[in-house]
Length: 204
Image 1 (cartoon, rainbow, N blue to C red):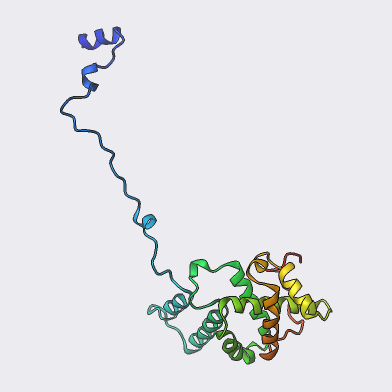
Image 2 (cartoon, rainbow, N blue to C red):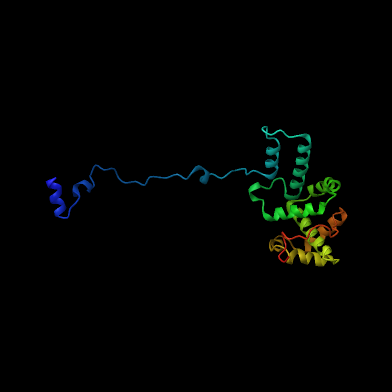
């Protein structure tokens, strides 16, 4: 205790020899710290929309009735036709959801009669093409619901200028008349019925 007291009085609370490096000490080397497994490894094959639907309906812990399974299968076919079966679930965007809503609006109350044909029509389209058709339908139907009979140029202008800015980035005015013609050939022509679209428009 006397030694410690004397060292403290001299302003040396710790014996310098205790903290002085020794010649026998190993050389200092940085210790590598690995990243957490989840942060360093990204999934090679992200879960797609088709896979998510299938794994859900095939879940052995659920007992589906025949009617429930049939209704679910119909919903699955429509979602895949509009959004795309290979689209990763993690990348499904608001634009995808807006397109799905536009298609549901087209189906209306008599959706059962239209559904099979619509699924068949959309199945032949790419995700981008299905988005073009769904958005054109929404623009066209909104104009009709407001009491106007829009020309093709007015529908295309509304598509590119009145809706989400991403439409202008993804589509050219020159390619849209083709899809208006496709809609007419397949009977996908709005009547102005149903609520006005508010999910994709810039001005509502």
